[in-house]
Length: 274
Image (cartoon, rainbow, N blue to C red; front, top):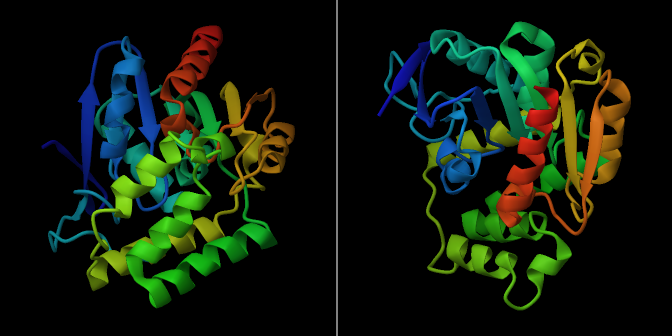
């Protein structure tokens, strides 16, 4: 299992394939292994996936334990910058989904020489009042109903409406997540999930979007009720030269709801951008 020393942390990462470097940045509370089913769709690229602090196998170098909160999207971006430098992968195509998009936009603004292109998928530049309440309720659910109640609630916001019909991916995915019994999280897992949640609530890139110079694609699902299209339009208006693509019926988990469509759109953008 490869690790890279970045600041006080040993970041767990995986590299697959050959070609131009591509980084897939995962979102809130999820490790880089979630990208594995999509990796064959990015054949022809040297694809980097990794675990942000607080998830997966990334560890504090001194204690050997998972890095503890508080976290911030700017700090996650700095970790990614260190990883790209350590692996000599920049400039790379950077693709971020959800909180991964929040991380990616800070990376592009802070470290422009590391970002060849930027793809922001189902993400937000700053949580508005409604999104802050949705995130805050997750904390209440974890306290009151535990991980199973929380994950069922999160699933409701993940998938586009058609995916909830009979035979749709949402039903099967939710049952696979919690149907075999209530997940058990220890106190550390709860703290780290809440650390990711609070980093998402406090994320604010509105002041730096105008500094992004990398060719940028903003992807939004028209069925995304967690980070609706209004967030995508705000980012496109603020990032110089950014383009917007809307995916009909797709929800917040667009890359996993329709992986082939997601990969097709991203690859087409990368080829256009050169």
